[in-house]
Length: 236
Ligand code: TMP
Ligand code: ASP
Image (cartoon, rainbow, N blue to C red; front, side, top):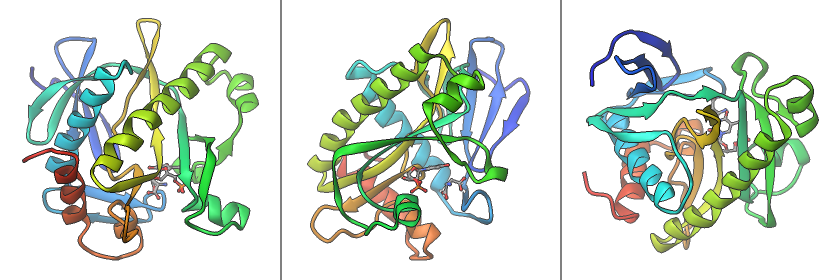
């Protein structure tokens, strides 16, 4: 499969069309960004690590019955995926309090959330991804009731699968963000799952092994991502 034309350049990935209208090529670049694009850098090997890690996780999710857009790895930093009609909302589940929920609600970090919380955000960097609710999604026609229900169901199913997978590697899945799209009438998981879009802490030391290392200038960003990959059984 070959790139035909560049469709979209995101902050960390680029999307290309292919000869097959149902398939796209996702390129995982070394670019990294945080705070809605206000902090950026290029980190050696990040594209490769996230591409391989995402492939590994998407295959685990698929095996657990969660439909994903992932088709196959194409190269070190490219994957072939299904061409989805993306829904412009982000689905966030939190098992432990961290990040924006602490700022918004004035709650302390590192509290176990039982049951886990679920939040929708509008995918819009200029507006800093504002939190929205199901009424906004329905009223503005971003998704239907059934699609909302499906996104929630699948996002929680991902939690069951990945909480255990990371725990087996001695890590806590603190929170994560997923994006979904439509493909021939079905809602399926799109975008990526990598340490760029989740928080992972070492179970015992609570050391941060995710993009908070970049956000907070802690260093060792890609090294931490590789450590996460190694702990879930992935070899490069
Ligand atoms: P938050 O604490 O900034 O709301 O983010 C919660 C989790 O979702 C965290 O793991 C980062 C991820 N996330 C993204 O990757 N991109 C986003 O645009 C948002 C809102 C969250
Ligand atoms: N809001 C997320 C972050 O701070 C993603 C982004 O900035 O685009 O990492």
